[in-house]
Length: 310
Image 1 (cartoon, rainbow, N blue to C red):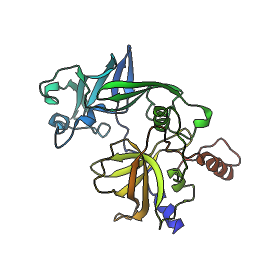
Image 2: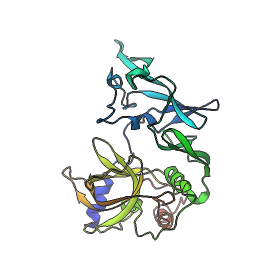
Image 3: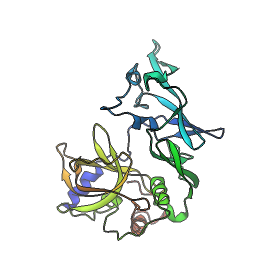
Image 4: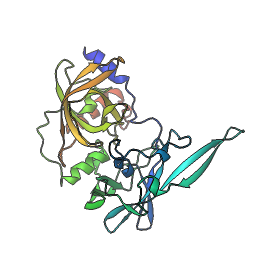
């Protein structure tokens, strides 16, 4: 049973999303930052504010599934939407795409409103500078901004030390919001222990606890395990959630569940209970680095600086 469990996990993709997504942009004190969080997305709700039809016009690129690029500004402790642009593609006879960039009339997205517009619908975390896509540039010294209803309510300077090589930027940010890591009895298992090249510490026939970042789309729910300087990003697919689960996208969570084989013959996570973590509660177990380094020495005795790619 244990071997089949690890085999199922090995079939899961290593990257969180398919094509790299084009960023939004953030203006701050004369600098332009790439923004890989998308504040405009949380403004859309099919029951209250449906996704505008303008985003579906024309052919969209797989590198921009949301259908637009937004530009934001931070000024006077406020996050404001400055413009929305849409790219239109036209296939030419010689086989190349011609791209036109047009600004979207804000009235088509928020009727009766004008730029700049306070992002009163958005609450979340923004890191500056953002890590770049296509590689990995872990934070050294970064600014963390906690935003509630478009207003900056917390501004923290955070940094990564050599001891943090097995911790993600997302986790360091969340722990910083709690003014440091909170004590934990660690009765939960680091999700990275469940993925190759490590043996699973979970009994597939019994419930276990693990932690990660919750993500839900119309297609699937996932428990994300973010990338760190020493380990790759991955995720656990969720087959079933507790009734009435209203956990927001991107929230660090602790889940109790079982591993089951889904109709697609892949291993999925059947969630029994889900608890949002409090600021300061980490998603990366302290025991993981020692196990990782020991496995690294066993697999690469000639190159102890190698990185295991899960």
